[in-house]
Each structure stands twice: as C-alpha cells, then as structure tokens.
Length: 155
Image (cartoon, rainbow, N blue to C red):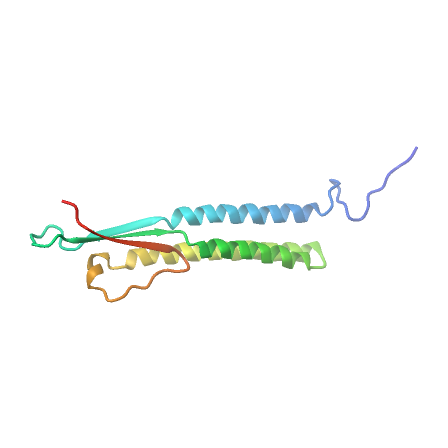
C-alpha cells in the first residue's frame, strides 16, 4: 500500500494557489461589470433650439449634446487590473497579494463612480438653453466623451 502526500504548493482542493485564482477572477469579473455599468450610466443626451416658438426670418439653430463613455476610462480600468496583478505577483504571501488585488478592485470602483458622477453632473449643469450665447464650454474629458451637433431646426 502506498500513500501520497500533497506538496506544499497545493491546497486542500488540489489546485496550486487556488485562493489567488479566485481573487484574480473576482477582480476581472468585477472590473468587467463596472465597465458595463459605466458605459450604461454615462450614455445620455440633451438638446435645445434657440429661438424655437418665436417668429423669426432665420431658421433657429438647434444643439444636441450626446454623451457617452470615454475610452480613457476603459484604458485606466485595464491599467488598474494590470497593475494589481503585477503588484500582487511581487508579494511574498498570499494574504499580501489578496490585499493588493482588493485595493485594485476598490480603486477601479472609485474611478467608475467618480467618472459617472462627474459626467452626469456636467451634463445637468451645462446651460443648454444659452448654448449659442456661451463663449466656451468645459468638457468632462476624460470622464466621458461628448459629441456636439448644431443643426437648423426642422419645421
């Protein structure tokens, strides 16, 4: 009769570093969900037509702002994941590595929440009715991308 013993690099389930695989998967799935939520909650639009409802000789101009997710935020989320995995790989213990990966997940969550709030507040605070009277407008880059369309009003 022979008995086998586990090596020191395996866990009770038999997989080496199973805890690290679970934590890395949690980070990846979490950031992926955050990216979808960010993309969904930063998609919005606003519009207005100057002089609409007033009789004029000139066709009134309309402005439409279409806000969407910024590629810079997606790149930042990918960088956070890569940093977290690289920093966790350099730690001496699994506990220290798990702490680094959890910090990366919370950093990604903070970035997504901040980006959503800044983008939505920006869109709500822009004086769209006075668009043609403004001399300049601050855009919410890198938190969101905005497309501006100025067209004549359709009758």
